[in-house]
Image (cartoon, rainbow, N blue to C red; front, side):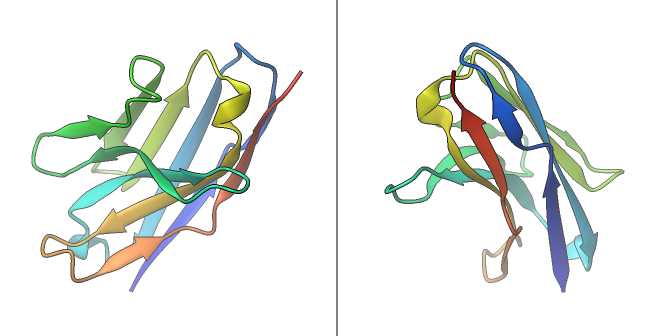
Length: 117
C-alpha cells in the first residue's frame, strides 16, 4: 500500500507564492507517476501537473509558466512550487500517484490553498 501526505497549504495573497510538498511511503516501488490535482469550490477535480516517471512533465494550461513540480525520487517526494497565485487557484490540492499500468492509483488527503486579498 502507498500513502501520500501533503503539506504546505495555507492562505496567500494574490501574486504571492506557496510551495506544497507530498511525501510517499509504503510500497513506493509501485509508484510510476506522481503529480498534483486540485479541486476548486463547486468545480471538478482537475490536473495541475504530473511527472509521468518516463521523463515527461505535464502541466495544465491554467498553471503553465506559473507552477513548477520538482520530483525527488530518492526521497519519494514531489513538490509543487506555485508562483503568481490567483484567486482562481484556490482549492484543495491533492497529491496523486499511480503505478506503471495505472491499475493502482493513490491519493493524498489534500491540503487547502486559499488565494485571497
